[in-house]
Image (cartoon, rainbow, N blue to C red; front, side, top):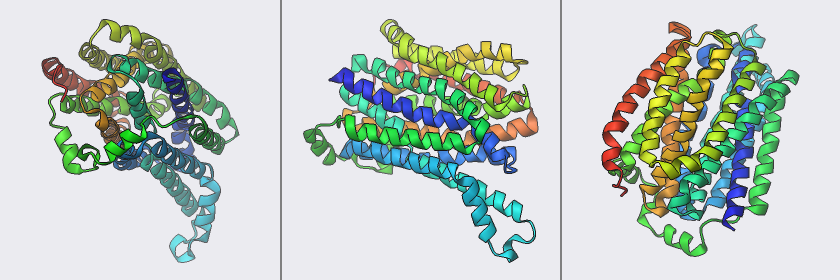
Length: 420
């Protein structure tokens, strides 16, 4: 039964990330079609992240209180709505722009239509982000059905599904973009429908009725800013979240700016950029689906986190100055490996640093901290890329990770046994 549940939730995450990664690398090109600046494109990602910052902790905590399955369905419905809006952005935006009063628009109707189209894109990303707790709820589900000794392996399946989604999604999105950027959005919406049907038909609730009843009356599962703030001061949970937020900022600058970097520095096409991201997905899937079991059996989670932040520091520095596609592919190998280890192991460590009935809220808070970095990363990365140089996002990320590495080495080993 446990293996069946793990397989189903991993499949759901795979389909979810397939849809997400199918459209993600195309967004800069999609928005550029309507005259968006580099900063405006970056803010498109920031809108999603800002909404997720609000929504993820609430969805995670509600899943602790009322169950994983209903909140997973709410999250998927929001994703479906967001992708549909992306697909209809052009005709809907043109209709809105044409309907605006002439006194507002003047003679430049086309510009008004482009602004309206971009507004629809922003609304779509906001709705998707506000309900975007898919991954954290799926991770909480894994926490419910696994023992601590198997936690990293179970979460590794989520990571592998994540990586596989990034293998197929960008390549498929790049291929579909030949027929217009709306097509990948509609395909992503169709995948969200498939996911919703999978949850309804095949995924049982991971919390028993007795557990849901107990959680509903537990003060630990109440959504409270005070309780969230107190969680940050726990001996191990606080440092883990600190590593998560600054690692997330450095890595998300890379991830969000990469398409613009590839276009501006290496002059890669949308299709080539998508294929490069698919290559990163292959590496991530291998690390999280295959290597993570052996790594966690041989090394402690603290050791793996320390190794991961160190390797990522060096990889981001190398990415900053990569001169061609071949060297880029070489540099991305250790970068993807480090990110794969950190994504899995930090999440596993977080679930062990809180009470079991708090796992959804803790993972939601972790997702929210990462979303906070996604609010800052697009704007910061866009400014660095546009006004400093194509090397600047990587150099800044490496500098940031050097600080994270020093913090992790000073804090995590001493607090390895302090889990409450």
